[in-house]
Length: 337
Image 1: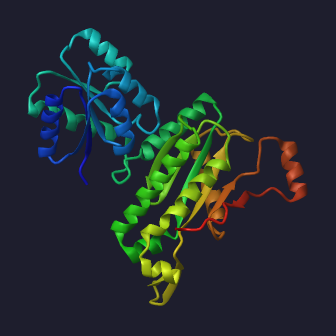
Image 2 (image 1 turned 135 degrees about the vertical axis):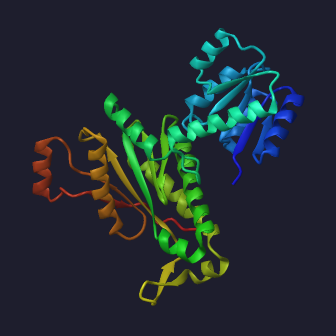
Image 3 (image 1 turned 90 degrees about the vertical axis):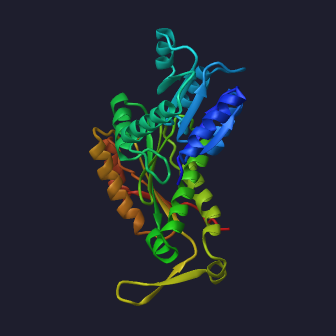
């Protein structure tokens, strides 16, 4: 899959030159003539690198970069600024706006490509981005969780796992399985965007495992929205004949045919500091693992969270009422298309 590059420049000659440079090197390229239209195009194209002019009508390159870095969906995308000036004032301003690198006009083809490849390599190393979805990977996930633990802010962390994915992957093949993974990533982004969670963080642990972190206590609405989007849209990833039958069959390890429904479900585990405190990333991971094991034993899409709190009196009351286990609930009866 080609690396996606977005070029934003009001000069059509520069846009065309830069586009040709990257396309000839195998990149997928989109362009925009100004900052406003560039921001709109970025949301659709979701590039892995942005080449951005400084001086443009409307909002300039610095303001475009600031808006990108303020949004969780685009904050990770590296930006190379094209500028006719390369003095220390511009460099200082670029640092304030989180510009990743500069290339001064006029530039050589070789220099621009070399800078782009270095920035991409550095960004992927720092974030450990998943190559399939482009979402931050385990290193960045751990960093974000440790950072919010350090600040003591409210948080809810959603761990998501697709149930039945292995059977689907074995039957339809890895290429089709990759489409399901990317579809789930899109569901996470769309649901957090619709919820107005601008400061949310979406990460891809690997395979069919994802993480969403929001700086608030919100357990049901976001989880249900993610599941609803996934279950309502997954039908197009099945063959029509299988959809009509309602199932597909594959052989298990013993050679016997097993029947699987034409409906993948989702287990969502929610860990938050609403009722208890956490001291470490390892502690959160341990709780998440226990709740996931519990949720995986249930049928259908489910949302699982702890009942336990730091309040010993509440724990005693829960024990007396028989409520000292995880809270688990169905995510609703959503029908696949």
